[in-house]
Image (cartoon, rainbow, N blue to C red; front, side, top):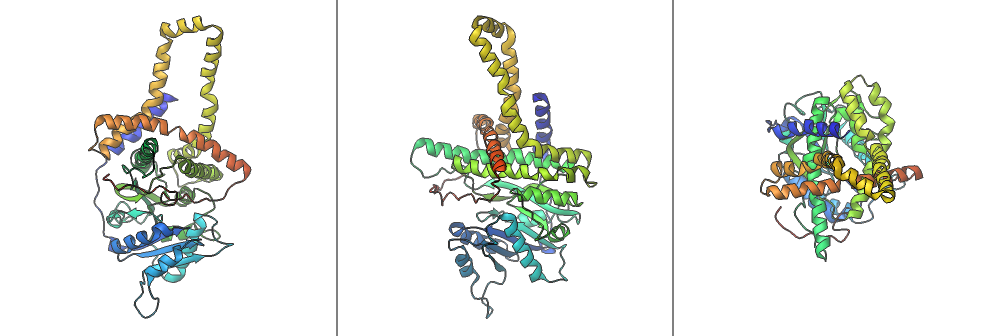
Length: 442
């Protein structure tokens, strides 16, 4: 199993290292609509809307207020200005949701904006030209993202229904202004690992999925053609009820015959989490969402639009949390048995170990750690070339430890699933949780 995993890592690393930037396209050939779902985002939404309107002047921005308990709607309303008399911002829209129909999940919020957009565009709109861009309330799409996504191999191809762009952590290298050397160091390291995960490991996996035709969507920096969304509408809209609504959307698009794309030629910035507790909560939600998507195994298996390799890749992804659960039960067994034997016959075990068995441990450890440690130097080479090789190696060892948090979150996700706790909980921003950051260069 370890050899197979090392081989898999090698296969996804090579395309990532060999990637060269591709030419962009003409963003004016398409119509762009940013969807920004908000739930108590008063602290960040004003800056985000201002950035989107200043950077993408010809695009429309749709802010979805999910019945916020703070001043989110008021902040957006002030930015819109007067609606009548010609002085208001006609490209900034506010979609307001009210309980009991609000605060039921990100997918439901996006469906509300989808319905509003359809009414606003009218029946005779060119839905092939309209592109929906989902951006988190703290998201910052790169200024060139529309040009890159308009490229011939992305939305320039009418068969492409959705594109995911690379995700970067805006606060990488920026410590929290909390007291205590350990807390600052740990928070900074946790943010760095999130950046490494998205910009190297996940980016490489996504690029490799281009060969299997199974590129998945992420919640932030997700671009989708409106006609593609129209083709998978069911009930209230194209987004369904899973906590991992982005991957779920990708499943429906791929099994409906649409192609999906991924690019590292542009990116979206988002804020990483300093707090381990909030990080575990976020990843528990993601793990539970993946478990919920197991209901699509039959759809994936039966789809005539997916190749055998593509279906296998998607099923492998859906199996990940379950494999992690199994791993936590199976992997410790040999060590427990060895410990019992050593307690009863320590001399015999020691002679066995020094007589050559140590090679088994060295080999096992190498194959177990190498697929994770390797991402540190790769991340340093592709993303942070100003860092030293030793720093990149340290990143790799830290990432090998970071990966073990997924075993924790898989068990937490299973417990929530068993208890029927399927509600969507917003992850608090760093500023909301008392973690303002100290401005430093990345």
